[in-house]
Length: 175
Image (cartoon, rainbow, N blue to C red; front, side, top):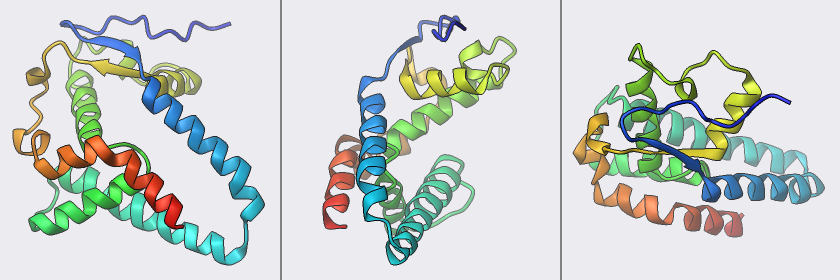
């Protein structure tokens, strides 16, 4: 059996720890989707689901959070930025600050020659899945990653980070 432990050295005081909250969330949502989702499938519900995916994952996560907030690929007003961050939260993939952190951590290490195996892509898909969905990087010094303070400490993002799962559960209840 291959060794799937992320025993690769993560440098400069950083630690990899089991990500129990995210791990549990992922598998609970998967179980709910498989158990309840298939039994309630219909054409109109499928179209509604596809529309929600486009809105939350496409517009919120990909365009809003990733391209807009993380990469600053375009400018928009504070309200638009906040709405896009909220749509990203409704995707159920985590809070905006978690995504900022993960993205900056990965970019920092992948742009270095001493990139640890955890951040490289020279391992199997199974190992990448296991490491990235089951472990969290806890930085020894968050300042090393140069996450913009206006994003890391944005009051709306902080609120969404603390409550993201409640918004997802609330939306699921409405649906």
